[in-house]
Image (cartoon, rainbow, N blue to C red):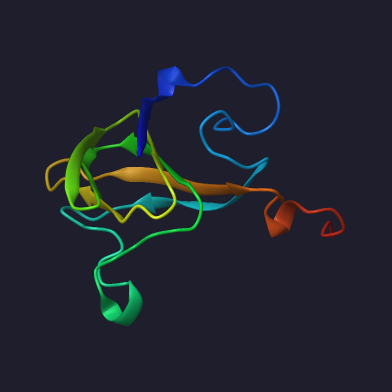
Length: 124
């Protein structure tokens, strides 16, 4: 896992803002997540309900608000507002929200093609 701060990002005028740390020409999927107090992401969603969550590509988390830990291969790494986490392929990861200061995150993946809503020929 790579851990950065928002202030570590280089100014970008084109491409995506994470292009120096998240492989892929386009942000291709993602969302905004409001964790419940004390919530742990991806619990029991691995094969056969096992507590295991990995990807074949990198995933970025930007902590917009709150604090907690990123559980990475069983190790708990503290995270807080302004942190950027790049989880690398094959790393088992779970975001644990604080009970006192719940986490709000943007998460995303990047790839060689734009999101389906942004591809040519999809304009209505």
